[in-house]
View 1 (spheres, rainbow, N blue to C red):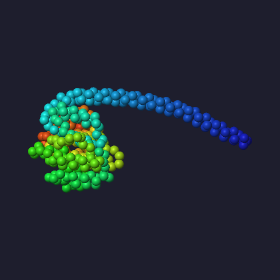
View 2: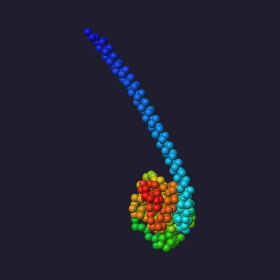
View 3: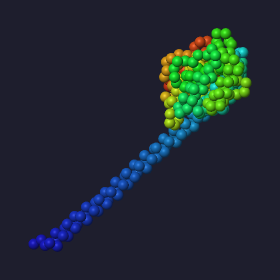
View 4: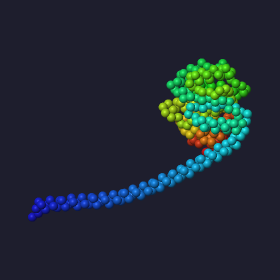
Length: 313
C-alpha cells in the first residue's frame, strides 16, 4: 500500500527535478543569449568605428573644399562688380566672420562698400512691431511712398530701401542726406538699428543673416527679415539675402522667401553664406541681380543650383 509519505516524497522529487531543469535550462539560455548579445555589440562597435572613420574623411574633404574656395574666391570674383557700390545689412545673428569675408570679396570684385547697417534683435521682435511701424511712418522722407501692406518688415524695408539704395533709373539718391540721417537716428534711438558712420546709399545690397531661427516666435522673426529684404530689393538695382546653414528651413529667413513666389521672382537667396563657397556665390548673385535676374543658390533642398550659371542638381 502506497503511504502518504511516499506521495509527499514523490511530489517533492518532481518539484526538485523541475527546479533543477529550470536552473540548468536558464543557465544554458543565459549563456547563449549573452554570447549573442556580445557578438551583436561587437558588430555595432565595428559599425560605429566605420561610420566615425567615414565622418572624419568627409570632414577632411569639406575642410579641404573650404580651403580651396577661400583661396580661389578672390580670383573667381575679380572685377565682376567693377566700380559698383554695395551696402551691407546684417541681422543680430549674422556672424561677423561671414560679414568680413564678404567685405573682402566685394573689394576683390572691384566694388566699394558704402556702409553697414545692423538690424538689432528689437527689429524683428513682434512685441515691438507697433513701435517700429510708428517710427517708420513718422520719419518717411518726402517723395518716398510706403507699401500698402501693414507688416513691420515690409514697412521698414519701404523706409530703409530708398535710404540704402540709389534709384536704379538715374543712379541718384532717393532721399537727402538730412532725411537719411534723421531716419537712421530715429531708428537708432528706438533701438532698432545701428548704422556705421557716414553710411551712403549704394547700387546693390546684401542682407546677411544667420542660420535657422530659434526660440519662441522664430517664424515671425524670420518673416520680418525676409519681407524687409524683399522690399529693399524693390528699391534699387538688386539685393541678395544670404544666410548660413539652416536659413533655408521653414523658420529661417531664406526659407520664408523661397516659400513666397512673388519674393523669389525678384530677390536672390543664398543658403550657405557661412562657407567660403557660399560667400563667393553671394557676390556672383549680386552680378546676376544687376542683369535683372534672380535665383535660389546653395546646398539646401529648396535651392535651384549651387551657384548662378551652374546646372541644377
